Structures are given as C-alpha cells and as structure tokens.
Length: 223
Image (cartoon, rainbow, N blue to C red; front, side):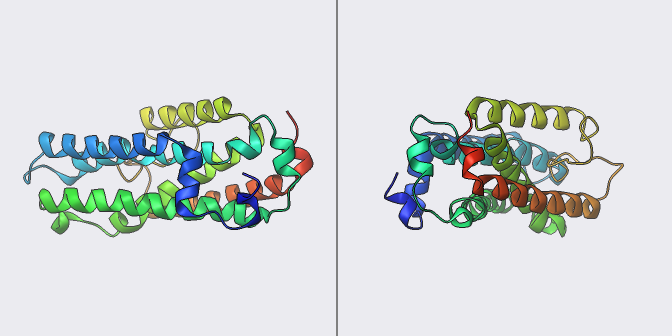
C-alpha cells in the first residue's frame, strides 16, 4: 500500500482493494437483470421495472466505497500508511467520484439492456438519465462520510443498511428528505426535480466534509 500512496491508483488496483465484493456486486447485478427479464415483459409498466432494477442495484455502490478506505481508516498498521505522503483529494474525494462514475456506467449498461429487451425506451422520462447517477453519487458520499467519521468498517455498513432499509420501507418519510430510491420507488408527495436537487446538494456537502476530516491525519489516527 505504501507504493500505492505515492501515485494515482489504477482502476485495477482500486478494485483489488475492494476484493471479492467487487465481483459479488457484479454477479448480483447480472442475477437481478435475469430476474427482471423473467418477471416482466414488454407490456409491463416501467415503474414496476424501475422498482426492481433500481432498488436491488442502487445501494451496492456502498460495498465498493467503504472497503476502499479500510486501509486508511480501519486497519492495523494504518498509522504507518497515514504517515506517508499522499494527496488527500486524490486519495479521498476523487476516488469516490471516479468509482461512482464506473459504477454508474455498469448500472446504466444494465438499465439500457433491460430497456432494450423489454422495449422500454419509449417510456423513458428525463429523470431516467440523471436521477440514478445522483442517487448513486449520494449513496457513495454517504458511504465515504460514514467510513471516515466512524473509522470502522462494521459501523459504516450498519449505518448504510439501516438508512437504506428505513428510507425504502417508508418511501423516504422516516429519516428526512434524503431519499435515494425516488427514481425506483417514488414518493408521490415529492417531485423528481426536488429529489434531484436535494440529493445533489447533500452529496456535495457530504464529500466536502468527508474530505476535510480525511485530510486531518490526527483525526484519522484515532481508534
């Protein structure tokens, strides 16, 4: 890891850090894709298809972001790693942004493939292009701030799991307006525009705060 900190991490090195969870996520997407094609056909309403594809695919970005920072936040020997010179922005916020883009491309390939097989493109709305990306970005920044502030892998997973479960089951009514599933399971009391704006603004706040704490090596060294 010490050599990795001296230069920008490659795509393959990033996901080597994530480990087998990377392939578990890809496998789950493939299985979800197959289930969608088995369960629905070209006469199905797009809202029902969005529900299954989005709800079972959006949250898995968390399994990429959280373990990506394990070596610097929750691992034995992190003191040695944090003593090495590295650019906090490159190894913090930029890794989150780059991973979000990669995940969204994979997500979008799946969604476009579903739409192609089930002839859904004529039912697409404007938010089918942008809201999934913002939702994924929000969940990525939530994961980033969780692992940085708690500096604990398990606590971070618990925070994400409880948040996603509560917000989905209540359609965003339980824990405020931060509802990343509005694209796939919309709350009729909110508009897509409002949801997009809120998630984007909070994501920017989250990634900014996270990177401030990530830059503070004294804070990151705390147990």
